[in-house]
Amino acid sequence: MELFYSTDIRKDTVLLKGQEADHCARVLRHKAGDTVFVIDGKGGLYNCTITSISLPKKGEAAVECRIGEKSEGVGSRSYRLVMAVCPTKNMDRYEWFAEKATELGVDVIVPLISDHSIRTTVKKERLEALVLSATKQSLKSCLPEVEDAVSVSDFLLRDFGEGALKLIAHCEKGEKKTVREYVSTSPKPLNVVIMIGPEGDFSEREIALAREKGFLPLTLGPSRLRVETAAVASVSEIYFASI
View (cartoon, rainbow, N blue to C red):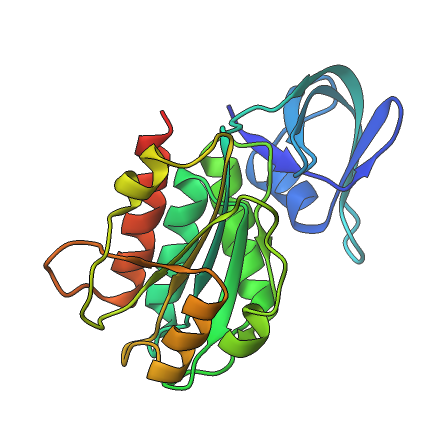
């Protein structure tokens, strides 16, 4: 099943524009009368029939479709997951994390800027494009949100909701538990927030502040993991613990 994405969805019609229309009509060579499947990024999957295609030499392509049937919650999960992860020095590795986290299941990706961060900026539009591609590839109807970069201090000022399981992975010594140990004793449905630090780890100040805000220390095992590996390992632990 090939999925397309649109935010222009009305009572009976869906309009694909720009890259989505180009991919549908020019790359895959769909024609009027063909059946296509469209997601709205909010849980809806639409079984549609193409009614018209516009491919001007100049200007934006457009594919109009008639909605036949709508399904809700395709690829949905029994948990909500926010991954707040510091950008890596090599942005390719952070993009890999965003892609794989989307394939497994994540709701929000927050680029965190730490006291020890080497990279302090991210290209949000590129991350959004990668996340959209991964959403369609993994047959999900909900599109994860990619937020603007935010400092650790500002992130910790947020209200994550009553009963949220808030975890922070860091290298300081002390008693820690694994994701599965925390999940096994947490109320359902799960609302999880996980913080992953930069290459130089969170600062002592940030770890202390997170502790004050109710974040619990997380261990990902005895191996020293790269940022993106730690982040994907955390997502996969939530994914498999919730199956």
